[in-house]
Length: 410
Image 1 (tube, rainbow, N blue to C red):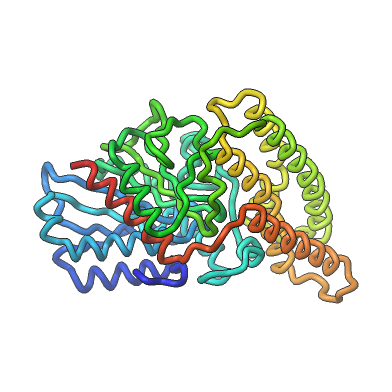
Image 2 (image 1 turned 135 degrees about the vertical axis):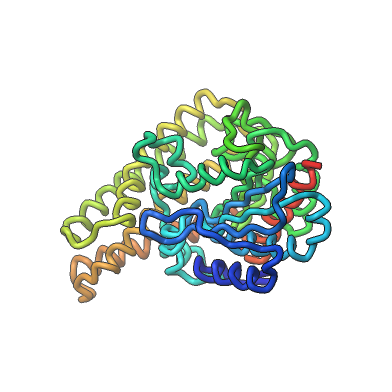
């Protein structure tokens, strides 16, 4: 899938993996690793000849359904492994690729254009569930008796394969490239930074999601004393759809507490508006829609107060000195939250097929949401001076980072 100018579909990745196994049956195997909540298959593609004392690397795509580059990346890596079969044999290495951890969420994100799209169109088709419905996050949020089947399947794979490295492919809509580790991989920062520079993707030196981690080089964060399941550390690779250099500035911010207080106030204002709009929409929808999209919208419009409280607390007492990059990342998060909620709420209204008369209450509500989405997404991209990253380059940076990490194990 190199050179792709579109995000692959769940079905397309599975079909490509199946073709690879048919072409190279001596090296490639494909099996079912579990099923999703909706009964979709969780496919595992393995490339190599497992042997006693050999090493395995597990690469997981589609951990979050709206982060769509990973499916192409795993096929990029699988094809590379087939090409390097002799080196693979000499290294005693087997690659295991979980083609999509959350196919239900990924399919819901396939409603939008597969290739480059305006930011408003992207958010118009986004599906982003609450953390408790995201397979990777749910493991630490839900009791054992209520675990998601996707999370259980991943845990079973880690116990079975005992990989020397577990790579999880992620992305963000606006930001920069960064990685997070649960253990040291000395020397990763240099090839990661080199690859990002060659692809002209900014390295994110500060992020809201890694305040509990220490830096092991620009854009490389290590979680201290992080729990590890399986045989080796976990590597999480993040690449942006729209890249901004504002997340690369490592200079100290002159007054982060003030800026975070402003962002928290904005979130509370947006939250009140969003809650009111959601209440109006629910009255129109009645009992006509249930399911993951409704749950995701409900979570989105009720989560802003918690996010604002986090911003206030971090501004008063940040665990690390906040830089220009950190504050830019907070700004992106504050602007993005209402866009996701508006986009998913519009999808609910679309699915309900309410009165299309332009003067009807549903049509006026939809028009108001569309205006809010257009203005907010345009403001986000303009404020961050962000530019679209070609999809093939998103995949290439993920793949090159994984290969660099594996090379660093030797």
